[in-house]
Length: 221
Image (cartoon, rainbow, N blue to C red):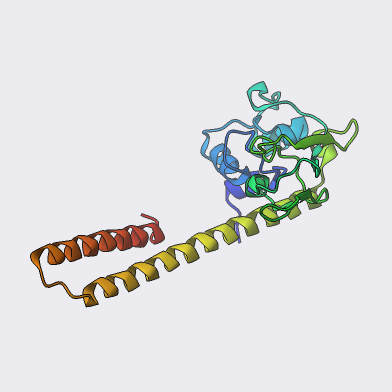
C-alpha cells in the first residue's frame, strides 16, 4: 500500500504523543505538516535530528526547534512517590500509552520501559506525587530514543485510542437500550387523566430526544 505524505511524516516522529507540538498527538501533527499548516520544528522530543529528517523528506532546510514548543532535552521517565499517591486515577487517564498501572483508591506505579516521557501525567496529579527523571544522561532527541521504542509507543497509543472508542460506543449502546426500556415502560403505564397524559408525552419526548442524540453521536454527526 502506498503511504501518504502524512504517513511518511508520522514515521519520522518519535511517537511520544506528548502534544508539545501543539497537536493532540503525533498523527495530527504529521497531518498538519503534510497539509502545510504546521512547521517541521515543533517536536522537541525528536530534537534537531528529527527536524533534519523531516527537512530531508520535504526538501526543506533544517531549522532550530521552536522554543515555543519546548527544548530538546535528555529523555525523562515519570516516577510516582507511592507514599503520596491517593489513587485518583487522573494520571492513568492522562497517559497516552497506558504506561501506568493502578486502580481507584489504590497506589499507582509507572512502567519505566513503557513511559515515553511525555509529561502529561504530571499536571493532573492533585498531590504532586509525580516527577520526571532524566534517564539518558547527555543523550537527547533521537539519541535518547530508538525506532523500536517509537514503534512500540505508537502501537500502544493506537490500541488505547481504539479501546477508549470501543468503551464510549458500548456506553452509548447501554444508554440507548436503557432509554428504549424506559420508553416502553412509559408507554405501558396507565394514564387516565389529562395531567397524566401530558406527563407521559413529556417523558416520551425527552427519551426520544435522548435516543436521537445518541444515534447522531454514534453516526459521527
